[in-house]
Every structure is written in C-alpha cells, then in structure tokens.
Amino acid sequence: MSAGITVDVLGMAEASGELQRIRNGIANRKQLHAAMAGDAENFTRQYLLNTPRHKTAEKLGATPTGHRAKLARQIESGSDAVSAFLRFPRVSGLGRAFR
Image 1: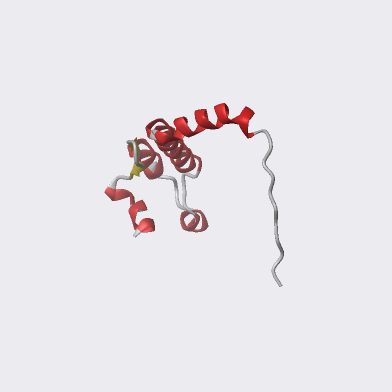
Image 2: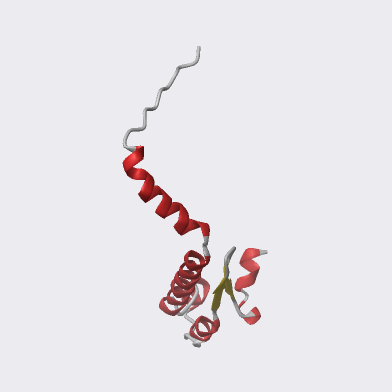
C-alpha cells in the first residue's frame, strides 16, 4: 500500500519576483564559477601553507624544505561560464590524486 502526499505551496505570487531574480542569477554562472575557483585556490593554498610537512616527513623528523610553500604559490585557478578549475604544477605530484 502506498501513502499519498499532498503539498500545498502558498505565497507563490508574492515570491515569483524573488524566484525570477534567483533564476536569472543562476542562468549565467560565470560569476559563480569565478567565486568558486577563487575560493578553491585560496583554500588549497592555505592548506599547503599551514601543513609544511606531510605525515611521513613528520614521523621521520624531516626538516621542512619549503617545497609545499613553493607549490602553494604556483597553484592557479580559472573559470568560465561552464566550469571552475585549479591548475597544479606537474612537479607537485598533486595531480596523481585525481587520476
């Protein structure tokens, strides 16, 4: 036996102007993607800068070399109307995480 569900939506006439504004705002996603790319770049950069050594290096007592800070400075982001992306330097090895 299946249960029936009834949903009544009230106030659509009043909300239609606001809904149209939201719809128009997401129709062109270039600005949204630019914000996403910038946020992802900053997040990744801060993560690398705040963790100067990976866990294996810490366990071995290795001295920080500044490698992660150098990589953090080389991360780039970009965006267009259909996508947001990050570019990692090939030497970083970070690309292996996404293959």
